[in-house]
Image (cartoon, rainbow, N blue to C red; front, side, top):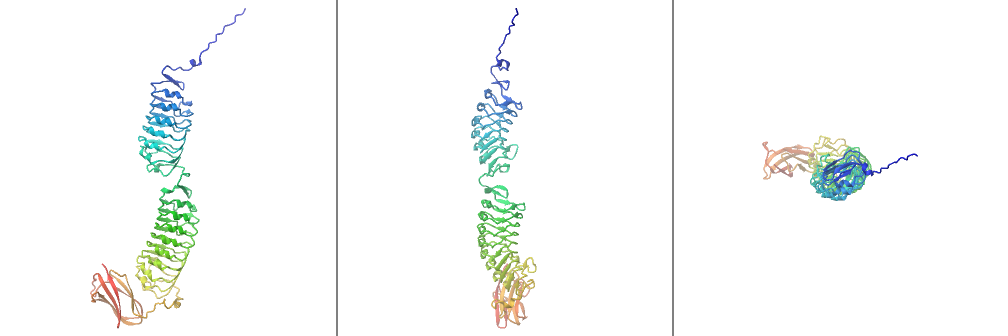
Length: 561
């Protein structure tokens, strides 16, 4: 009889086969840790996976927790926020998801918090403002969104803040400047690659990095770039390869003081919205290929000092609204195709010093109002189709340094008063009237510098417009007041013996300028301010007397110091 072997089955609880922790210890990732004696837990780069166990919160005296560079998943456990002894934790470079718990704000002793390089989403809780001991915060490389809570500004000890490469939006409040963050050091501050909107606080504006602002309120596109219009005071895109039209968005840049789009390939018309830029003082659209007419709305720019539109393809007429530009000092539309009359409203531009409209298609007379602008220094009207006579009030332009009237259809006689202007008459860059129809009987200062003139129609000039020397007459004295030289012009009807004498206010003879036979016509004499003995006279009132026989003409002269 065979014996049946007896087989003993020994059942051992599976937990006996695993690591056993003593009382007062907890097991974390197959290791035991003392509940009361574990002050630092550094498991960085240990290949940990799964979720963070809730039991970690039992380490009642834990001060530093580092679980970075692992494969941890899931959410940040709520229990971690009860670890009031924590001074710092690092959960970076994992795959944690979900949001940052609002209860995190209860860790009021925390000094360092690193949640970077995870997949966290949602907003940063406002309770972060309770964590007043925070020195370092790293939230970068997540999927966090929304606005930064205003409470961050309460963290007075915060010196490092990293929130780059997220999806943050909205406005950063100014109180962030009250924190201790070193904004100028990229090792201490980085919010690059988000969608934070302008305006930015002054303390960090220069360190904002790249922000996607296309959806931000008050942001507009110009020439493929985005701008927060409110903050743009100067925009200089000159000679920068800009092409295409000027967008209507330009009208939103209402704080612009200076706009320079010159030397590009801009086409199309000047949008009417340019008239919204009421703070503008300098506008330069020159050297492009801008077409169409100058919009009437440009007259809204009442603070404008310089308007440069030269070398374009502008057409139409100058709008009358230009007369609103009472502060304009410089106006230039040289080399366009602008036509029509020069508006009389130009006379309202009382601050104008430089007026360039040459090489266009302007026609008709030069408005006398233009010659009332006594501050003019440069006046370029050449190469147009202007007609008529040069009015006598050109004498008002006493500050003029350059007068260019060549290649028009001006006719008639130039007034003697033009000689009152202190121009370099011999320099063609300063004075040029050639290529007109001016008559040959010229003021003395111009005679010989008139260039080519078509005088064929001078015989047909209206008798009222021709200058006849049928009387003795003193025409002018200039400058007057003077110091010490004055030029006096006069005319004689025929050849006579004539004398010119200077007297003082008491009738005493000072000097005789001439006593001789002179032919008929316009004459000029210069007094150098000296008496008969060659001594310079004192300042005061004097008289020049022109006499021939019983005929006498007198003009008052004022010599100043």
